[in-house]
Length: 210
Image 1 (tube, rainbow, N blue to C red):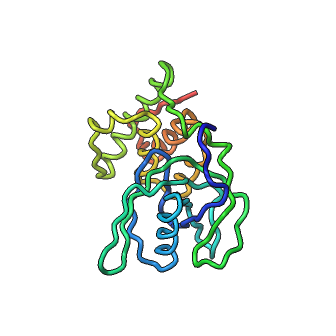
Image 2: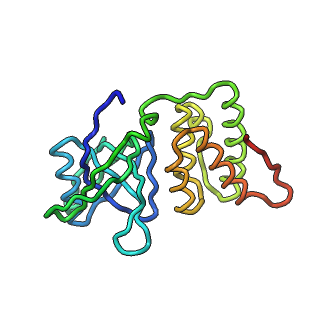
Image 3: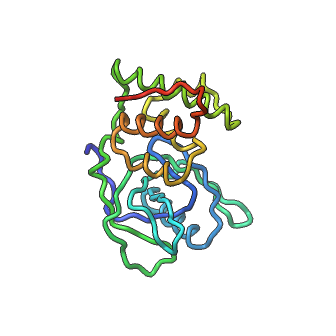
């Protein structure tokens, strides 16, 4: 890994938000514990983790994403508006006992070192990406989701796949599955399979990626 990230990080568990590397996440912070988390992060390295909360108690998934606070605004009513830019996914190793209002975890990034590199597709993979885009366009249109495809096609390919997974109208569990998929090629395969499952109506052309 060509960058070093902190072993221990503050983590914001949030239900319904699946956050990917190379994507941006605007957050409106108003709870005391997360105001503390953001303020502490700003004073240190501007890094914080986002992770999907499960429905039962304090349980969380094991894989999340480290982000850097790239925009920070304090409102007069005490709220903080931030933009979080995704860097690299992490795996939870253990929770750290602390006296703070927010939770901290020891994490490991080794599985996801590829998040730090550009994974532009080769010739064969480009065909798979084209199939995904064609399917996603139909799926998004069917669900009245607007996306500026002309601008979208200008961004880096890994970011394209992550963005589609982040905004697709699929379940949180399905998004988490994609988040935990290590390579972009496997993400494409899994996302396409999910989109085709929702889109298939008897007339929908099924594609298969080997």
